[in-house]
Image 1 (cartoon, rainbow, N blue to C red):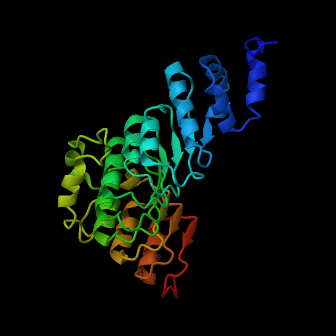
Image 2: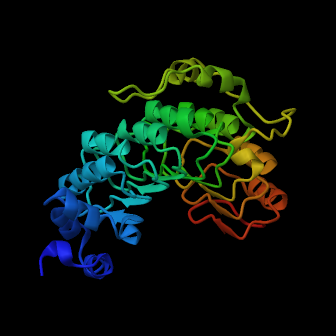
Image 3: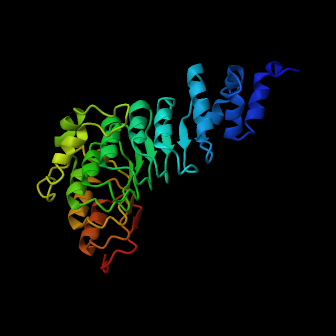
Length: 317
């Protein structure tokens, strides 16, 4: 029997037992083989890029796009820490169904994150922990394109280049439910307070940006946000609770571990705006008082877990 004579259901059984790289190499043989490779839709729901083999996967994605085949919904690139930014940038346009992407530890990824936010209209979750090339420009670009739909965002350990400009842009992300900024050492009270209470006064300016071009930038909104770098709210006294703040007031998980420059002033804003929190990580931060943490506990009545490991002076909380 020729390969063409094998029934489609048999092909699906065969392909389900192969690694993604083997499926991609098989699908690259011909358009007929590619059609069979893409006939197993379940296989393409979650794709884990194999180490040093992302070129094969990207090649089959291009072929799949030309066939109008079902494409990736969840991409996991954690096994490819040297994934090139240009490769991911090229793949962004080939994944219109993408909903979640895990780029944790991808050290070379940068402007492709903006391209993903721009060209993947269903993208709601981005894990970018340990991506050292990400900066305020990329975060502003991401929020420019996806502020109304991002639900989960992890920017942990993007420590040296993500700061207050990013925080103010994140204040426009009203759909966010989980945000991790642990070890973002450039984040200060000014940016954190603006993020919690909502940077609504910047919304029009950010919306006026042109977004990322084909070369991948952060969008023109970065220029306006940069002008406001030192113009953040100095405190939360007198600031009305805004539905336009971070997560629209519905944020449930927040990680601020080892954010060394934020103090009680930021916690006061957090307690006033993020009352639906379920999980809060304040570990390894030495600038919080027991009194303010107690106020946060009082205002976040739904809180299930609070990590204060390494926080000094907590007696009596």
